[in-house]
Length: 61
Image 1 (cartoon, rainbow, N blue to C red):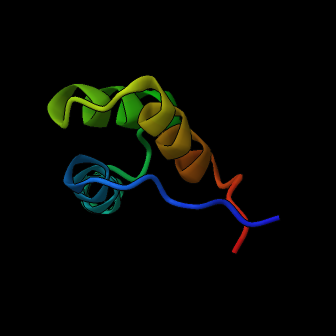
Image 2 (cartoon, helix red, strand yellow; image 1 turned 30 degrees about the vertical axis):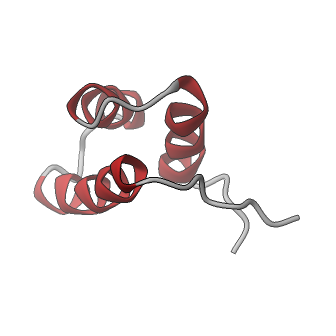
Image 3 (cartoon, rainbow, N blue to C red; image 1 turned 135 degrees about the vertical axis):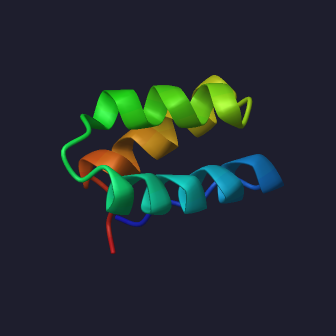
């Protein structure tokens, strides 16, 4: 089952931020990363949930 990425510039920026944040902070908890991105990029609940699943590795490839 594939998941469609939500549309919008904020979620794209958040996904990019997550990649950069993880490379600089490899031991950071997924919940901390998602919280930071959600606040920084003003994500709505659906976008935050998408990002949380992505960070936890639950997304289909």
